Length: 307
Image 1: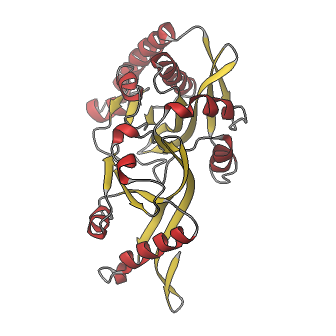
Image 2: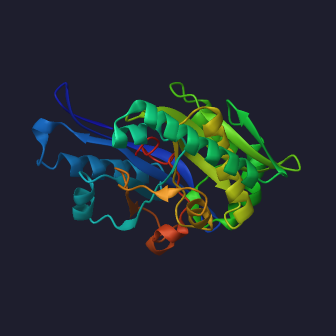
Image 3: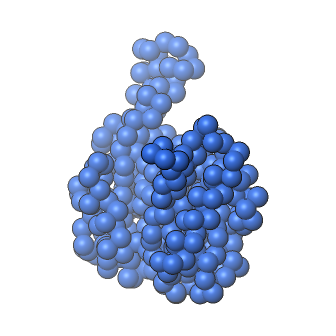
């Protein structure tokens, strides 16, 4: 939605519609994205006007709840508008190659490279010894239709998350024209028991990947660990320096990741405050409140490369 003064755009706001799975119900939600006000029009109520317009239009289109991951600039405004805070999002990172980290600390390139070689060789061998021999991995350039079976199998074990069915994943990743994604499938007895979708990029001079999707049985520590190790193996094979994963607090994800080489990022992501505006009676704020209820990934909203 654009707000204009004559031919000049002075504000914009967008709604990204998704199906939201809440305690067995499938609702229509919309992420509030790309909210901006022209700098010459600050503190004139433009942001509030755009936000109210988006919610009214969403209500007309059948949206049950508008959600957003607010940054430090927009969050105080949403608080003034009365939008409740659902939780503060956490993100986890695992270092794979540490040459750049060592260069920043010891300033000598050859020593940094030597230290990285020793570290990465040790960690890669440790990973190989740890990996589940019965679970196999397949790396694809597209999201296959078979992920629907994985979604159907495990969705009832979750409380709150965006629907990760093939319809959504195909639209969100296969059909996006400007970014190439990698899909890592975890299989047990030729059956998909989990999948991760990766967005490779360069951030702060480091080659990295963001796990925009990371999905398996939320209560199965074996499957979560295996999926994390499959992603780590992909990173070693492709010389990526680190991997970023966001999962929410639901299930065993956080504990398993933190016990397998991941750590909470030292600084929170830029868009870290999860807010909501409930528009219909099909869902209550109580059902949505709390990070422990949510499975939320880097692919949600505008957080794909939010580091």
